[in-house]
Length: 199
Length: 199
Image 1 (cartoon, chains in turn blue, brown):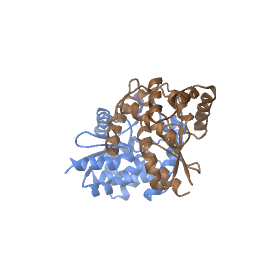
Image 2 (tube, one colour; image 1 turned 60 degrees about the vertical axis):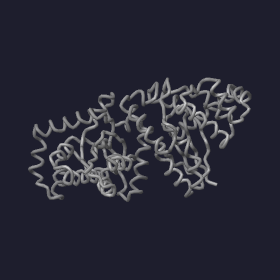
Image 3 (cartoon, chains in turn orange, cyan; image 1 turned 90 degrees about the vertical axis):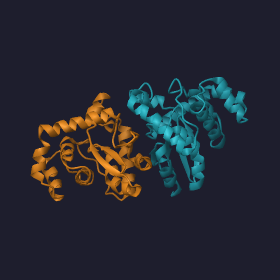
Image 4 (cartoon, each protein chain N blue to C red; image 1 turned 120 degrees about the vertical axis):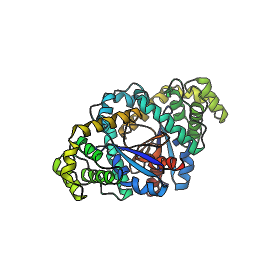
């Protein structure tokens, strides 16, 4: 079965609607999705940026929040809210996600993080918030929290970022098909699924 | 009748598919379009950029050309090609466009410029190319070329850029509805038309 890679960053605003809708959409295209969390921070550093481009360009930032209000309304998602600080520190959430099997458990946890962050304004670098999300989804929270702090997990996330850079990713969400075609942005989800479905 | 403002920059790659399809799309939404050429250069300077962001970020640049290949194929436009140099100097073309009445004559000339630049790789700052495009569309080319170099026209383009900045535009194409809702990008054309049609 054809597998589409879904590359997302927990602090990325446009990754949120993509994460909430990708699984349902993928079913309608007959495509399987592999959930690939990564960090944009190290990639942005390569561009000489020390924060989100939406902070570096206030005009674009203001537009982005309005654009996402409209997108969430269209998708019947709860109104999108701006976390403080923005962007949130997504390091721990990404490590935990990598400790969960791809795709369904990782997808469930990831949607929980996005919902907590953008609908509930909960700090996603807070151990209690992270533990809560794991527990509510019946994961062995203590074990996973411990495993997420191990050197092996830290290395696994570093490898993810290396892979992202090798793929030429520069933003999130991004979608990579099994023939290495890359699509960037929540707006390209349908195009990516259509491409993958044809392979 | 509701009028949607279409803000475009001749050197902007994503302005090309938007310019080629907006009039036909607008008819199906019952919306009238006002063609508003402007320059991104002065706006980018405000961000500290001295060229296109697609040159400043080579990864994004490579992606953009591939993305537009896919978009043009979907729209049955000729294959998109990369002008040399990129971006082209769009100053003269923007001044000429402002000398032509909005909307149909200005739209025709503007589509001619985009076609010449991205399908035929002609230099759009060359007086012969500009004159040819005007003549092929039966405009009084000599008169318009002369008018486009007048101080009044130069001032009109400066005012356009001022207006764009006041509207908070930071990229092209952008669409502004009659109730001041702003949409950015070729991807948002349908959303903008739908919004305008409801007013």
